[in-house]
Length: 520
Image (cartoon, rainbow, N blue to C red; front, side, top):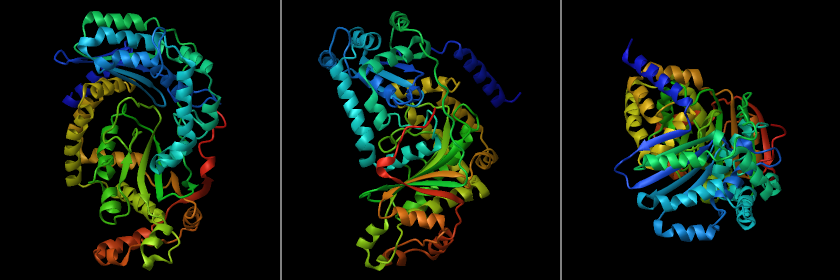
């Protein structure tokens, strides 16, 4: 039996055993002066009842930003200030994670706050109202105004998971958040934040006595009151199905496109796709094919990347974050905003006659790059360089104790023991054939969902161009075009003529986005 097969069998055995005692993940660090505690509940936004979309997010925020039975939220902040302690909550589709961090010298005092917040949250009306108001502003205004990149990303998820419990944003919908009451929050916490779906994670120089104490205290949480919902499965696109969100005064066209991916980190093929994905366009990295063709060569936007799983808060996070594990997965491409016709006309008199900006060309260029990768695969040199990079890069995910603990807890969600170490071992034995086979097996360009957030002056022209398979040349200023190599201009002609398998194109008014699903 070869070495890698033995490793995989051992990993499977350890994982199988850990699933029966999954409530505790330890990261012992005797030399550390900090204690990290994470409480992961297998309860995320998919548990939001129909008509109350956003309830899980409201509940977690009210708990962590509120008071306890014996301290108000303000008193808690004053109490922990000398300790330089911190705590927060994060909610995703399938999990909610409460994270607490404190110097070991203050652990006993700080633990009274942790215990109070989790076991006896006050759910005070002022705290609830503050949380709800902020959440309402986000779903009503912020998501539509602050970042068209995030807007297009959530719009893609809306398409992928329409009519499932995965459809709505974690923060909820306008009507969902508005309907949430403090009594809903209290009941939801009792129903779903329970000892039966809790994993305790702890890192640092903690004592066995403290560990026993927190385990005993968390056992006082109620039992699960309702059955946890099954995660919604992504819809399968028929051809290229496009939704264009028409937004007043958008500065560009932000594009997210993708399709269902039947594997997650739990599947060993994921390591091969990590290599392919990194080569195509690792998040916020400047060496990927998409970045090179769209940003470097043509200066069309700020960056272009690909993903084989959800990437949380990509506008802010340079590295993947723990705490967002999901069973329902998809591949996606992020084309950061490209210029619209109105903007190009204002900048360059030689482009005063153009009707459509760069969105159609950028989309064709990105899809064509995937198509070429599926057909031709990676070369040996490309494979070796990318694999070598990834084996170092993945270790940057766990630079802190908090991140290391978080990824260990995510590993258990996927049925693994240590995702980072296991992926590294698989990357070490991968072959070029493994990667190219995975590309052909899981990636394609004929069936995709596409969301485009653009200015209302551009929406109809993009729709017309896509529906009629129009050839939209790349629009350069004369100065830029004169400096481009002939091979780039030749490729531009090929991209402009590249056929997209467009089956439907709809324009959605900015005010009509993120409506609740018809049924879960």
